[in-house]
Length: 409
Image 1 (tube, rainbow, N blue to C red):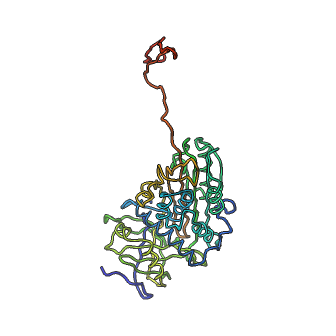
Image 2: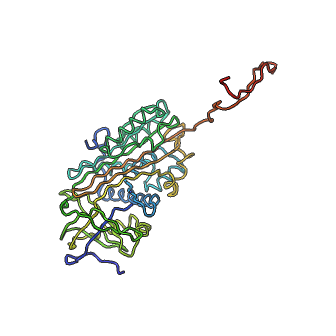
Image 3: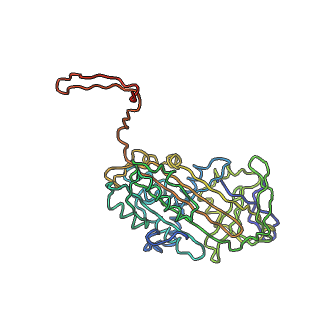
């Protein structure tokens, strides 16, 4: 099938589009450091965004399971790991800098990018970071100060081995995602007496389409699955819509903007009829995405149809991050800039939610990381038949020798 070119105003096509893959948050102490807002030039901001996107496309390919819904947040994962990287040294820092496309372990550009994204009146966009440190654990002051000052992270000292602390972490997440994401603590393995630091990033987005869909025009329509079977799904419709479209190698891209300013939008990538989505995702990277978005141009297809959908997704990112090259951070890396006790990164988890309907889009993401220390010697619990002696320590004389098969008798 010949690849489509940019759709012209006279084109007569129907775009049937699918989702790929499964109080608003406040600023202030929970938000991004205000002094970083506007600190990046347009060129620097674009370069920072390219770094986030390049990592994000790599991560998505690494975690996506063929044929299954997947919804990741490149921004949330990149910021969370940038906070971890600020405490890394040696080879661990080099690996994290490379995977995340940072300039160095304490690169401030991603934090400044967050600051530039907030404060928009056209959409609701909440971004928040937090640290939950084990009481009395020896963290380096300059690390804690850097993360708090640069990323606007709050800091709480808690007992990470207590359920009460896990509940507080869950409450923090729920409040900053409008209740869309719950129970992150359980996914992170909390409570855990060996945990010494929990890092969290939360993103909440709510945007209304610049041109909404008429709910009366939503009707069930066939949607063809990867195996060729058709199912009926609620499909939103517009007739003679004005949208921006562009074509790529094996796909068409369409952008649906939010709000009057249209700064934010949803780019939908529709594979050509003879191209499988999983195959397309294998070759779609940040450079291809950026090149195609730069080619978006106004067009008027005869009809626009987009499924109404609601997805939740979550995954542990450890294996994916190690496959991308972030190896030593997990269980044996250099985090002495974070603490002289040199903890390691034990778990990274992301949970996401997105709802797309006639009015617009609501989405949330939380990425969490847990730093742990050595568990020490394994516990010794006498919970099975055992033997014992009573002896004289000076002469070595055994006074009593016994075996216990049932302590009750």
